[in-house]
Structure formats: structure tokens, C-alpha cells
Image 1 (cartoon, rainbow, N blue to C red):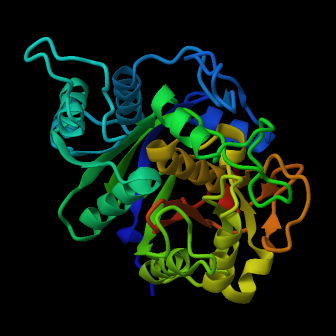
Image 2 (image 1 turned 45 degrees about the horizontal axis):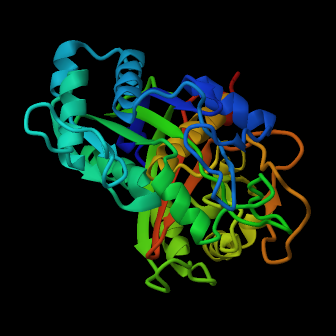
Amino acid sequence: MRDPATGAGITGLAAVSVLGRGAQAQLAGGLTGAAAFAPVRRFDVDRRRVKDAATLSDAGSLADELADVVREACEAAGLTPAQRAATPLLLAVHGHPAAGRVSEEDGQAPTATRFAAELAQRTGLGGAAKVYTCACVSASTAVADAAALMRLGRAERVVVAAGYLVEPDQFALFDAGRALATDGAARPFSAGRGGLLLGDAVSAVVLEAGVRDAVAEVVGWGRAGDAYHTVRPDPEGGGLARAIAAALRRAGVGPDEIGYVNANASGAEGDSAEAAALHLALGPAVARVPVSSTKSVHGHALEGSGLLELIITALAVHAGKLPVNAGYLGADPDCALDLIVGAPRQAESPYALSLNAAFGGANTALLVRAAEGTGGTGGAP
């Protein structure tokens, strides 16, 4: 029913977040379950209701951090200069990624499109094919597009990069909207959860068609809108459930084959809608599918979230170890899921879902399969 050659192999990956520099540091942080939130020092938060986020102490500019992870991912994939020059870049960033930076040539702050083109030029890639500024599904949408291009035979490989560094404008908006947790912790799916906390995430992956020697493969993807409310998800989870169903259908995988879900849940009220979506999409199988949200340790990185979470998910099924749902205080009857609390678990299936949702009712699901012979397939981690 499924063709192993149709997956988009993840052959190179790189990431930086508060959990550390390097892709493996992201998985290690997720497995410890130690949240990394602390008072913000990058800008003044004295007038803010909430003071905490998950920020790097040594972050450079977003442009420099993105260039570093793109180069690292390309090196990890073993791409030659000629291969890089023939590879397009799909970039997920905020709509004004270089706010405050003025070009010496024309005195203007670069648009997201120009920012992406400059990044492609700096890293030797064959131009920026597309820029994604669709909030918290930006990166996952870019990955879905890359996988679709390869399945259709329109690209041999694609580099996807995404980045967000916590900055004063978005921090102020989320704080004014009372979306941030006041107790310094993000508590996905937990009773007593009080909101999300922001975090840094800059990452890149190289996706290649028909490659067997990969960390993992993106074998399915789905996108759906629920058009329920400007900022609130459909409480019945209809849109996200349709995205999950589409990802499974595209890969020819059944709900009973899913071995892990890295959820979108951020510790906000809407986590219950995601729980409803999982019940709707997976049916009775949901009772035995381990679930966690790594936002509980690295925070919500907006446009950068989806790619960081995909990297952690891919590495988790590759290693056969599943991250912890940190910050958990107790069961919420509206979030009846098999949550991974206290300690990481062993993976029992090569398949995992990475889910994201955004304001406006946008939902994405990426289905990942561990490479043959790795932890999630019963081989040695």
C-alpha cells in the first residue's frame, strides 16, 4: 500500500534553541524534561505582566543564526557546492524578520522575501523559492510543500529553514493578550495550565527524495482549516483531525501504527481542542499512543516551532526514545491522553506525528517514519 521510496528523507539537520546548539542537544533536552524558562534579559520586561521566556544567552542576529544552521545541515547531509547551488530554500520567518536592520545599499529594511534571498546567497543555495509567514504553521507548511515537490518529481532535494528569536514586540502582544503563563511554566494538557511561554528556535533540514540513508523520512502530511474563530481553535478539533487524517491517508498508515505524537499543545486553554482532534482522528487507538509537547521545555517559537519540533520528533523515533511532557500537575478530564510524564519512554513504532496549529484556524500534521534499523524500528538506537 505504501512505497518506501516516496518519503522525503531527512539527511541533514541542525538546530539551536535554549536547549543548546546542535540537533542532538534538542532531543537531549526533551528527554530530560527539564524546562528552560527564565527571566528575559534580552530586552526590558519591567512593565510586562510576565517576565519569563526560553531565550539563548548568546544568540546572534536571526540572519546569522539561520546562516549557521543552514550551513550545518548542508554539511551534515554531505552536499557539495554544486548540489547546494541546485537546491532551493524554503524559509519560515516572521513577516518582518529584519526589523531594525537597514540596508547600506538603499537605506531600506529588507522584506521577508529579500531576507530569504540574502540567506540563500550567503549559504550557497540556489535561491529562495518561497517564504512562509503563516504564523505557527509556517515551518510545517514549508516541510509539507517540500515533501510534495519531491513526491511530484519537481525537486530532488530542498532545504527548509525556520527561525524566531524572542523579541519585544511579539512578547508585548502576547503579554497584553494574557496568553502567557504567569507561573513561569508551560503545562501542556495539564490541569492548572495557565498559558504559553515564548522561546527561541532556529533550525534547518535537508530533505532528499528516495534516499535510504536518512535520520527519518517525512512520509505523510496534511493541512486543514477550521475557520472557527480568529484566535481560538475549534473545540471539537475538526480542522486538526482532518489534517491528521490526510497525513495518514497520504502515507497509507493506520491510526494503530502511530507510536508517538509531538503535540502542538502549549499550555493554553485550547489544548483540550487538540486532545479532541486526536480522539477524532485516531479513534480507539488514541488510548495507547504516547503524547507529549516539547514546547513544555523549549517554549513556543511561533514561526520557528514546527521545524524544531519536527527535528526532535525525527531524532526521537531514530533513537527510539520519546520526550517528556514537562510541567504536568495532574489530569484534565478534557485532555484524556496517554501523556509521557516523569521520564522518557521507549518507542514501539517507527511512526510519529508532529502537529502544529495557528491563529485563524490553520492546522498541519507531519507524519515521520524512523529509518530502517534505528531505535523506532526495533534496531539498535
